[in-house]
Image (cartoon, rainbow, N blue to C red; front, side, top):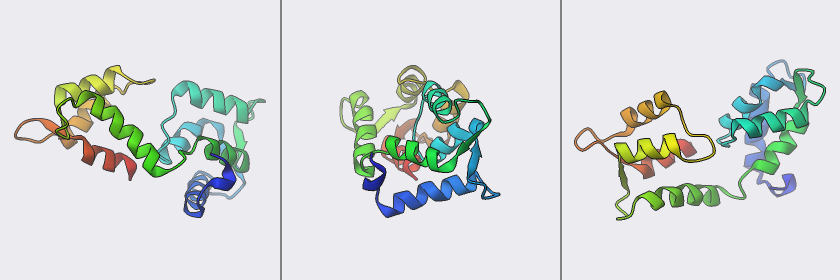
Length: 152
């Protein structure tokens, strides 16, 4: 998304995040923190994308990136709207929810999260998600609540 098209509250969220990774207010963040910064903003970059962006922003390998340059990259990556982003996630889950029940079995969610996408989650990450979200009665996960958690 174009930086100028971002709503003010999104611009502020990005700036606040960058500030939290630049506690000395130097105007720079450590290159190795790019992935953490993007993920803390609920962007979902692959490791390849993080490496590519880091190389783009720190071509001389100084170990630091100007926050203003990173801000522009984040703005480019920003979803056009939260509703669009949420709809993309919902649609991904609906592919596996053939009966449109709003729930998936633990086994199905495990398969989705460990096998699909550009970068599947680790076994430990998936076990924690399932443990924290599965209904104790039937082991199913209401993916709507999962999406809401991920969007917070």
